Length: 102
Image (cartoon, rainbow, N blue to C red; front, side):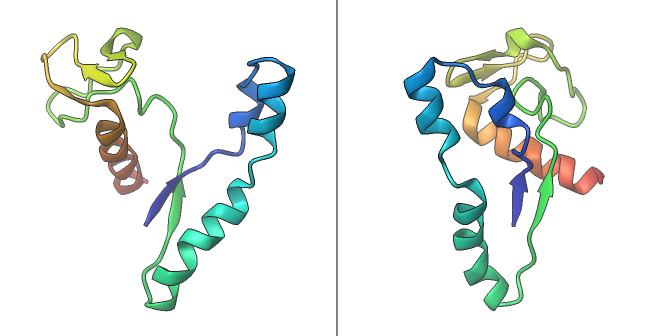
């Protein structure tokens, strides 16, 4: 089980006082512990990966093109090879690829 390393995420958030308070009060560590304990109980390990550029990088191994214009909200379309996918699913693939590259 692989998680994005989100420790520095909160420093870049600025949506206004009220929304910032809600986002900054989320207990990411507690949530991760709750998600991890069942697989750990069954011997399934977990790890974390730096998520840098995973939302902008093409997951195709022959392409790997990284550009801000690749992502448009919930849709990902590589500007180089024209690969298209749901952005959340594609990010999950890129996180796993980063983990294998470690």
